[in-house]
Image (cartoon, rainbow, N blue to C red; front, side, top):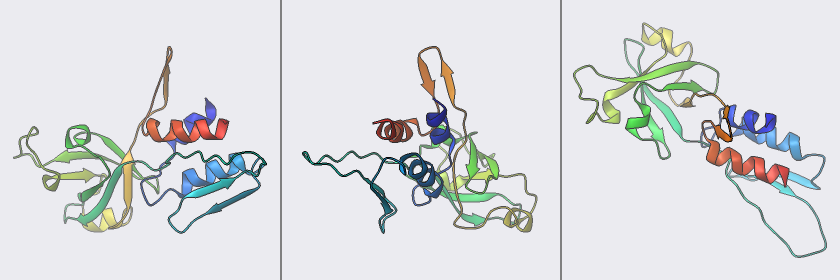
Length: 172
């Protein structure tokens, strides 16, 4: 479970999978004949054999957010990456690849049941654009922040659907 926890807790939004790619590569170096990354960022791990050819695949990225504007008050405006829903985003904690954390909120005058992503922002605790830019830049990506939890026979965590697939392939 330690490996699954490491995979789940890594920050790897689509297009920025370096962290998780290295974890997987380190796990498989000793058992694969060839490991390389293609031009799209896919990690290819090849094990030679004499029988039928078999391909096992999983994806390692996770949904998230990309900063596209920083306002004068230090709030980050963003676009979504993947199947992010506004209902899951409001009041969620996010984490950037560089470790900066923030909270997603929305403009006070908006109704939370009808608010659009354009009226939402991330608060990273900055009080000005300059302060925010010292921690986060336009184009930086964040993902939902969360914990890895084992409760009885259940495992819970962010990006578990993607990371359980990676874990299963490593174990295989």
